[in-house]
Image 1 (cartoon, rainbow, N blue to C red):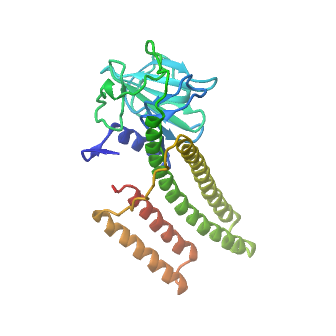
Image 2 (cartoon, helix red, strand yellow):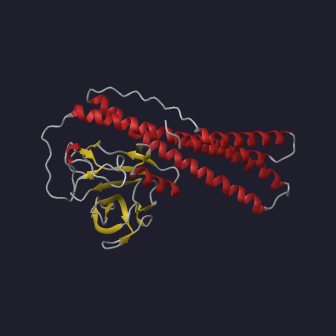
Image 3 (cartoon, helix red, strand yellow):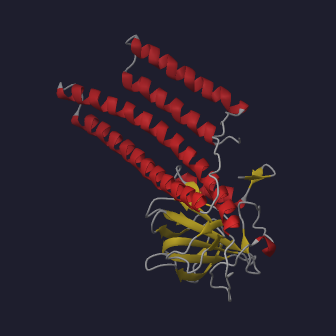
Length: 326
C-alpha cells in the first residue's frame, strides 16, 4: 500500500508487526462493510484496519502517547486508546490489556495481547474524525465528507439511516473481497514454500533416524532434528489455519454479493517480479543450491547440507517476490 512511492502510516506499522510475525497480513480494510455482530448494534462501515495474528500475540504500539481509555468491546476483548501529543488517537482493538489508563507509551511498547485472531487499528484526528492510515503519511486526517455512515463509538451521539443502500454495500464488499484474495494469495505463497521445506526436513529426520539406529550419531543430534521438524510442522499448521480462516471469510463475502444481486469480482493474481537490484542475490543463491545438489549427487557433501542451500534459495525467492511492487 504505497502513496507517491513512500510508506504510508499503515505500511510502517505492519512492517513493525512483521518483524515479530513475518506471516502477518491485513485481513480487514478501511470502509469495509460490517454487519450487526457482538461488536456493533448496527451495520455500518469499518473505519480501521485488521491485521491477522495468532491469539496471544503481544501487540506493540506504533506511536508514542498516553493511554486515555480502555474500552470493553465484548466480555473478553478490549479497545486500548492511546492519545498522542498532536491530538491524534489510535485504538488497538480485540485485545487483552497489558497497560492501564495513564500509562505512557513509546513506539514498540506492548499494549496488549490478541484475544482471538487479529488486532483492529483505528485512528482519529483531534476533531474526532476517523483517519485512513493506509492513505496518509505522518497521521494526516481524512475529510469527514469521505464517511458514508457514522459508526458506533464513544464519541458523542450517533444516528443511522433507516434504509440501507445495498448497491453501495455490495460495491464496498467487492473491493473487500478483491483485497482479501490478494492477502490469501500471499498466505498461499508462504504456505507453499514452508510446506516444501517441511518435506525436506522430514526427509532429514528419516535419514537421521536411520543413522541414529545404527549408532552413528548421538541421541542429542537426533532429538535436535525431531525438534526442527516439529517447529516446521507447527509453522505449516499455523499457515494452513490462517488460510482456512481467510478462505471462509472470502466465501461469506461471495455469498453476500450474490445474495444482493451483485456479480463476483474477477480476481486476477498479479505477477510478482523480482527487482533488478535483487536479481543478482537470487541468482547467486540459486547457483549455490544447484552446486550443492550436484556435489551431493557426487557424494561430496551431505544431503542435509544440499537441502539447507535449497531452503535458503526458496526463502530468499519468496522474500524478494513479496517485497516487490506489482
